[in-house]
Image 1 (tube, rainbow, N blue to C red):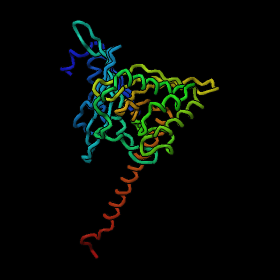
Image 2: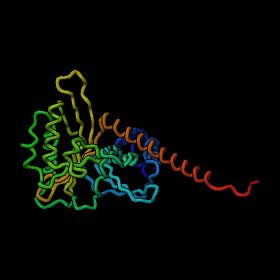
Image 3: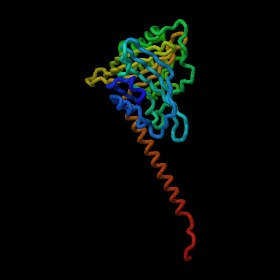
Image 4: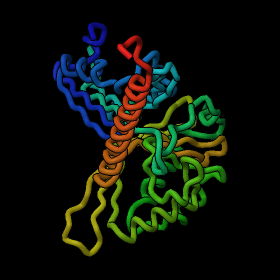
Length: 313
């Protein structure tokens, strides 16, 4: 952390959101604690990380970065995880320092057992050519406007199909970074096509009053990518129950024609989704314990079956 000292304010705030956990620390010591090995998933060894693409929101001095974390599990098998890092800066004539770091990503998804019908695989690696240098004729403001329209299409009172059909690429896919998307029957692999997304939005709006507002929007000056940090409110329709509030960071990827081709979502999990994950974790622990007991019983049985050496008879 010594090298970061001049780049952060004394009251810097750091937050790390994952599938299940939310860590918040304050000050340089708290930030060092947040970034320490104690928050790595058990059995996972981080070998390397690097930044794939960045974008800046000049209106409020906010920087978004997509990072790939390369790790190995206990068997030596390589694993890749993706994180979006949002950094808020204080800039003036004499200094530049980070005031707030917010990280959302898959790092703690490694703790979720990768078995069972409800578990989606990790997102495909970004080695696939879905990101590309900004094409000629495309501009950051144009792409940000399209992402804001995509945000508006998810709100109650908006016709998602009418708004998005002119903007969506034929190859459009929406991915949930945690593999927690509903409507599994509508999914192809780990993603949803536009038609399935429309049906999901219509079902949500039939059950909830949905409001989604962008907190920050930033477009890369070098690549066909827009980052958004969103706040969502979902209130059950016709009910006195309070609204549920969630946040999400997503990365929107555009094709060379300026059409929205992929959406990668890093969002808060609902309480029902967290409960499902906890059940899956507990089931995996019980299965592991049962397997260990069975192996121990078999070993003891083999020991008892061996003939004794020597004896009086």
